[in-house]
Image 1 (tube, helix red, strand yellow):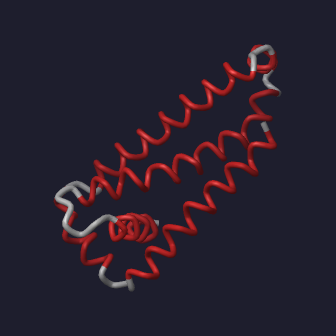
Image 2: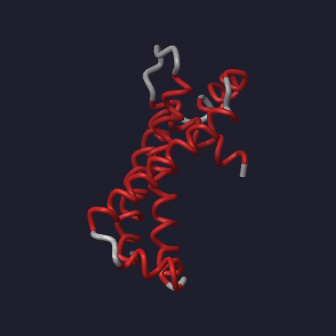
Image 3: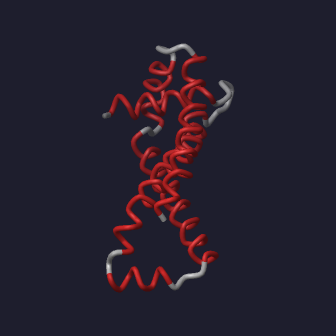
Length: 133
């Protein structure tokens, strides 16, 4: 599992301009957005289970769509910040050289292609999972 996360971080690290001083932090920020989309997709898939809880389900059914949208937005922002904070703790400046070496193992074109596919896939998965809400 660690190698998969390392690959994700290395792919997003390689898309940031090479002369940036805080390249790893910017890569982690960009990575947290599609991972937040994936977390939101999971939230949408679990929403029918939440609706089946008697007291919570009744309260959620009485919310207006605008209030429900604000709640979803807040949950998305919290998921993104939580993911970014966790990844920043794991990939501190001590592992900068490791991520740099790991990203140089693969062709840059392949990593950029992976980032584009991951973004689009995460967005489409989130939109698909909205139908469960």
